[in-house]
Image (cartoon, rainbow, N blue to C red; front, side):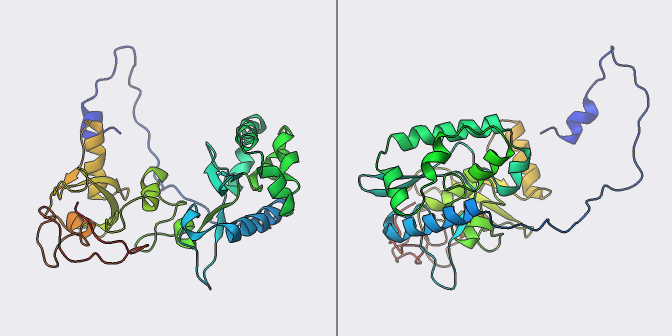
Length: 300
């Protein structure tokens, strides 16, 4: 990202002759139109039925993105590159190099989608129980999907809505939520959002910044160090924090917030004593607030 002062100071090469400056006197606009009616294809209906049967067979501890929703909540199937295989210990889901969102199929080049098919076929071949198990669940089309080259839009559509792309099971929040509620994969970059599925339960990844916008932070040292600084890893575009983050990246630095900042205190709130004014120091002796699986707090 280039800062404004850098642009202002940039010299025009001698080989380029200035010809004046043009600008437009009206703001850009986005036209809001009705979404074309979206229906569930027969491919997607079959894939979802199969995914739900698979999820019914999986123990809660083995769910790819738990916990299991409790009614009236339900699983939403994310077109995120779901590669389901049957291992000797049960069903597992891996993720493809790229997932194809439903709307993105209309810009998808068939040969590039076919490479995803080939990747999936190679993976499934390593788990020979997969195709017989899928057939037993009623998903007989799996074998044909994996062996048929994708050469046109029909093939792209079939793959996009198949079990091997369209069935990453997520809660509604993890799928398409927006802060200050649960941040969803649709709206937040995966390198940051993905940490929600492996962070310690007592670390608060998502925080509210002083200007009221939301961001994400990470510790700067390993758990047990007692260091309460946090690194800013995501900030809302146009916010003061985003400007600071962009400058840090330009200069090859980290944007770090001090232990007494509101962001650090939020991040470590369940690891420090109530009312403590710094996130640094020895861990709290009390038990952590229950998150997810409710494990006890341990030292930062």
